[in-house]
Length: 97
Image 1 (cartoon, rainbow, N blue to C red):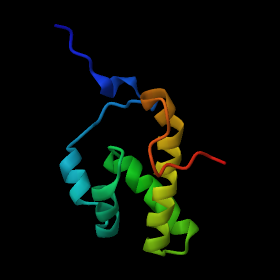
Image 2: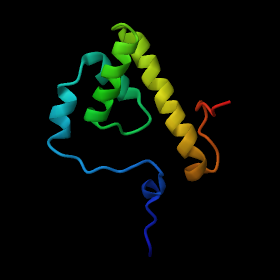
Image 3: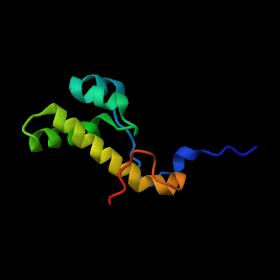
Image 4: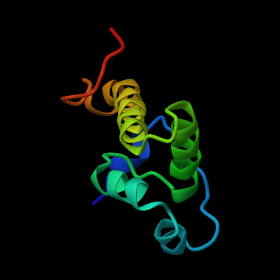
């Protein structure tokens, strides 16, 4: 029997993780950890922190606005990758129109 691994069909880039991902997650700001807990994609702590820092700078330190920005970025990623994986964009994902 051949096992089909559906997680390998994503067009998102893959990167090898370095270090202890759980320890890195524990060092993240609380608001970012809360956002990651509900995220649909498996964000690495380093990429999430990089985007979070950029979002905070762009929104004058407003954590709520930064979280909304991360949600929009994630929605765009899902809309881009969804059709390749599921044939349609997942419900709630923005389609760019």
